[in-house]
Length: 227
Image (cartoon, rainbow, N blue to C red):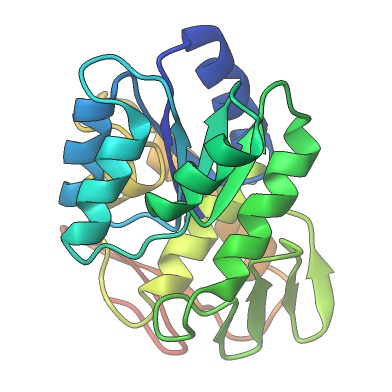
């Protein structure tokens, strides 16, 4: 899942980023409400995590504006304000859930997964399949022809993105932005290394290769020969 975290406390934000990455998700961070609003307007996310008290624009104002624009991305509001009136105001501002600080990461993760599961099927398929390769976005279990494959978090995110775009060529720039959250080319072989590791896990012990390199273009996941 691609998760936008709008949180001005850098220590808290880094804690969440680390936790979500370890679970195989793709967290993106905004340090104030205005930047968070602009990021939510310019890209698609599976879930928004919005701190209530933010500089430049408070979280409820940013969320209300998104809702007025027709953005229905599930959102969890984080706040130290836990009275009933506070929670009601947060939900009426467009929040789908409200979690009071301090909280346990495991509870936040569970709430994020529940919200993602509630999304319309056309917005997000929870089970991705290409030929005999299957990925469950809730359990993070990956199998091919019934055999369970053990992937590292980054390998999982890479495969998830390739399966979301099955049959279409994805470029290195697309992978850097969507899987690594790099908006520049670090001039390293990080993609090649992870593609090689992923290919060894999903294709090595199987007769038909699914992950293909398209020379000069990028990569494609499909049941057929590559270029």
